[in-house]
Image 1 (spheres, one colour):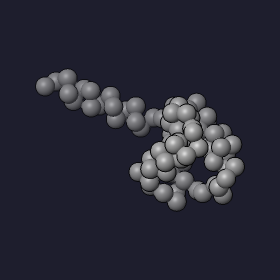
Image 2 (image 1 turned 120 degrees about the vertical axis):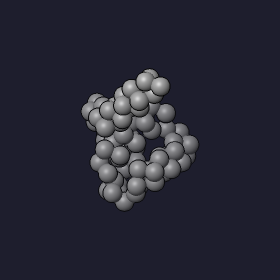
Image 3 (image 1 turned 90 degrees about the horizontal axis):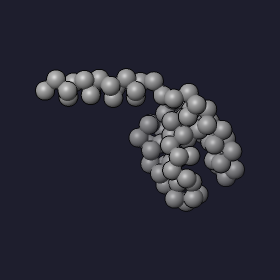
Image 4 (image 1 turned 30 degrees about the vertical axis):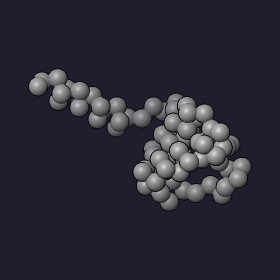
Length: 80
């Protein structure tokens, strides 16, 4: 029973501190890829869950690699 709280604490700590490199990559991908076809919306236009849906949908529509989608989501959630 001691392992579960320790694991939960580790998960929360990593979620609270996103990778700055991943966020920077996401910002560039967001501007380069999403800006081609869309007016770039502020991150605050959608909740984190909303961006999950949007990016997952566009990953399929725009043939976006999984790592790129992950970086874009990290950027949007950090900016939200």
